[in-house]
Length: 320
Image 1 (cartoon, one colour):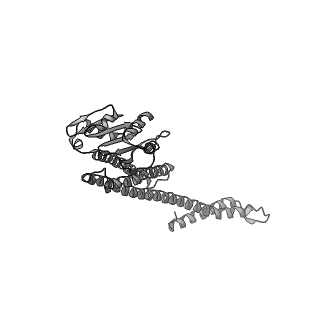
Image 2: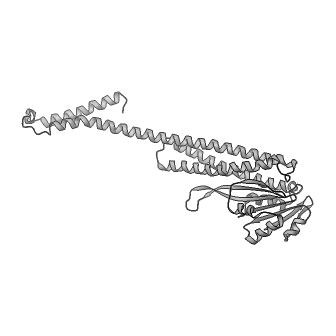
Image 3: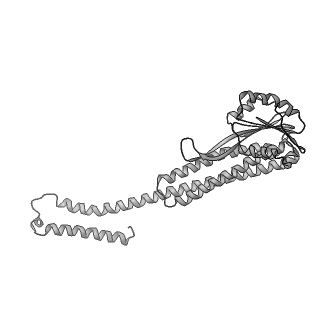
């Protein structure tokens, strides 16, 4: 648990939460991987309800809730990482709760997040673009970093889609289908994060609360527009993956048709040969040609001739 109290004149740190809250300037309390006792201390100092803490700890969907003294926004970071039980990449999300008061902001996460850390380091360096503004602008910068990470994730997914599109033409292996299904799962996971995040930021962009300053609403609208763009990209990529799956299934079907055509031609050629063999396998006593010295050779030659004529016919008809 860390604290910054800052304004245009500089940054100060306070170990005591009450002192930090009452100090002049904007108070930022950054909490990550905290104990229950620390969480209760933060909640008691800033009037955060226990249910809000539970929302962060229980990994609920992104949302924004407006309370009399503060605004609670919950969003999720998302990155592609190898799974716990497989080497395949999957979308891993982490929850961050942002509590915005009149002159304070509290960020709560279960782990240390890069999107929050970048803004924290900017405040530590006394970046005047942040110090000279209120807590709502600090929250905006965090949301903007989270959104930028979404774009990085989308770029990685786009590369995977391009690789699958090149692979899918003429592919018949089960590995290609597994890659397609993996992409579908990734896109579904990203969509589950982006859709509610868009709605959560939309509440802040509309200015429904008294915490977000009017001059800063345009920044939240910019983040909202970016999230709308990301949602549209996800829907487009889902269509591309669906199209790749259709191409793969058509390729499988065409390959199966070729196999069936080949087997049909083979069976058709063997059919008259089986008829000839069946005649001479009836063992009738009166079959004059059986006594002929060259009967066996003539039958074999005739069967080869029948097969050759049928092959030529099939080729003439473009069946082979």
